[in-house]
Amino acid sequence: MLEGEKKYYSDSIKVIAGADEAGRGCLAGPVFAAAVILPINYINNDINDSKQLTNKKRRELAEIIKRDALSYSVKMVDAPTIDEINILEASRLAMKEAIESLSVPFDLVLTDAVTVNTTAPCIPLIKGDATYMCIAAASILAKVSRDDYMIELDQKYPEYGFKSNKGYGTKKHLEAIDTYGPIKGIHRFSYGPICRSIKLF
Image (cartoon, rainbow, N blue to C red):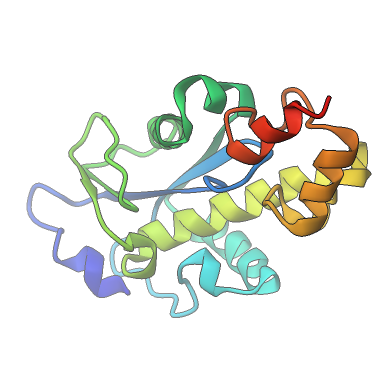
């Protein structure tokens, strides 16, 4: 995976930041984004797209990434903002805030398919989280951070099963929405399943 970053390093590009998001397809909860700067020639063969890893492995790698990264940052954009500006723009905003919060200056930003207006050039890469280590590392931090948020939310709203579904539209989650209604400030009211459920209440 390190080979992906290598082709971008040059005399003018010595520090590369990777960024990715988690939670675009969920019906509830914020979208999270992370940005990560790894050392040049950093090697960890276990780092991969977060969707290809088990929960246990993601959590192990998240701690390693935090320890080894030159800098990392995680930000979120809440459900009401997602409803206001749409999920793509909310994802872009979360990534921009994460990138701008990095404590180390960078020369280039690589993202997973989303163009972000940053102080350095940004290159969006299709399936970047499966090809570039810095993007994969960001995807892991974003996913683990979002999962932790939804697990905490489950303690307040146990009937929705956020601990297990993480806000995605599982059968049990949809049944809970139909029974109890969507939660203001938590569910994404601009999403179809939520819009349809509102008519029941």
